[in-house]
Image (cartoon, rainbow, N blue to C red; front, side, top):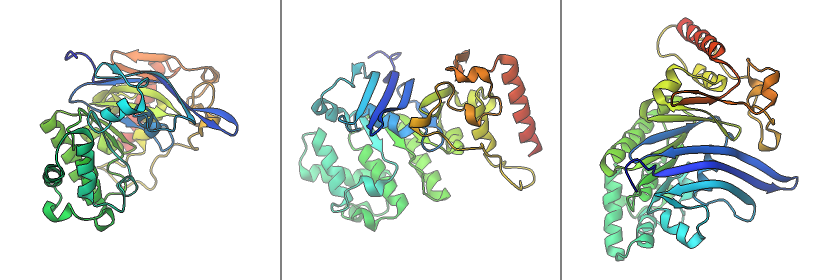
Length: 339
């Protein structure tokens, strides 16, 4: 694989699930790529399809009830067509997963050291003793206190931050080229969140791993991500560098997300800005723009599938023209300045 070839390349990914009312499409024509050493953040409200997208890439959805279409290649190899046995060799060794909830992702009846060592031995021909020793090293590397003792603890004996660190250690056990972090800072206090983010950045620098960070926390995105993809109702509605998306948002949904962030300076707001309404469920996503029912700029053209508007490497699915987009940004900037 050349240096210019993406580590992970996703083209036209669509995912449907079988229900009592027939197939329901949860992910609709999603495309993105990740290069070596890059941090790509996928943001959006709960239910927008972030986790389903990544679980589908790893083949972790039930193949009897889920239907995946599109092309996904990892290191130049198409992985959607791979049999489970071959795909299992990539999970853990090539792509590591940091689960959203380590308490449910880790088996409660085994120690964290046993589970990390099991992941190592599943992909490498090493002894139990050597795997355990590496588990201790990994726990020390992620900053767990007293790793020699922690290796023999069960998940319920660790705090939330420690469990998250143990999950990161497990994800890094085989030095994967790509880390998928599914909301790794959810339910953690601010101090531990900062420690986990610093750890991810350090691991990227030391191991050279690319990271896909799934989150709804725009503050986290601004701190660590190189590029941002905004997801809503199963579609990528905006893509761009972190600077472009935060400084010059092109989609009304992105503006809504940014407006909901409390300002760091100025007087305290009596009420934060919020996007009206609720995200649609997969069976109720409009045929046109999924955000139209909640969008202050909605119009008749939104009933059709929105076009892709581009500004160099920055793009959005929206009918707003350049003049209207500029006016939307100015109004947003004025609200932020007044806040």
